[in-house]
Length: 260
Picture 1 (cartoon, rainbow, N blue to C red):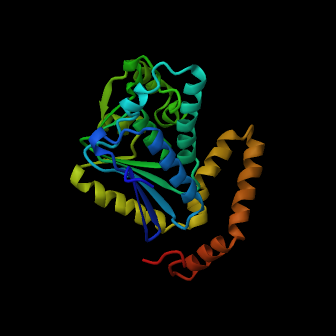
Picture 2: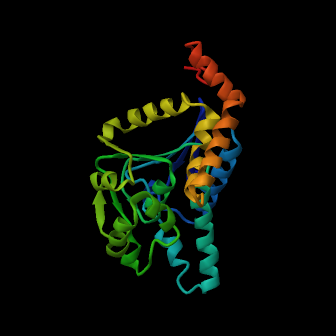
Picture 3: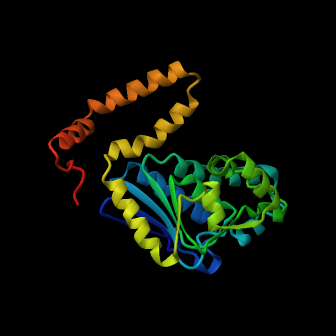
């Protein structure tokens, strides 16, 4: 990996830190490829929680303008291939079988909002600003739209996709893009508390929670939902993790996956 993406692993946590502060952590094709590769490796790695964060004042300004400039005049097929690589990054992050946290210390525009929406949890500094800014360039937040719409709802998306206006952290919290908003000086500590909370949960249960949500939402009817959920909880109850968790609770001790 280049210095554009800093990777730190330890104590069950993988930290992926975008490191292009001079361009507000905007991403180009190289950073997209590095983030995708790091997330694909994380899916198979030993870490139990993944934190996405950034160096400098901004979380991410979205697409790098110099990268976008190189696409001016490119044919439609080239643009489809390029957009598909960004789509793969977003889907990989969204479906990563481990809990993910977006640590948002500053501005997030365009695709940067998409990264936040793809994370399971998002904690933002009260000074952070946001915008789905693509319409100002005559574009749309198309690739990130499934994840942003899921996060903020269609009603809010209809306004902010069309207007490309900026909104603050309080509004992002109200819309559901952020889970919590804290003072900038409290951001690190708040994220650490959330990490510790996640590490107290069973790793299999915690990592498979989002798949359960997707499966329940995709179920065609309540009968399918009932069969799905009954099978899922039965499998977990007889699994080594489920057996250890239940036994530890009854014995009033910490389960083996809690080392703190």
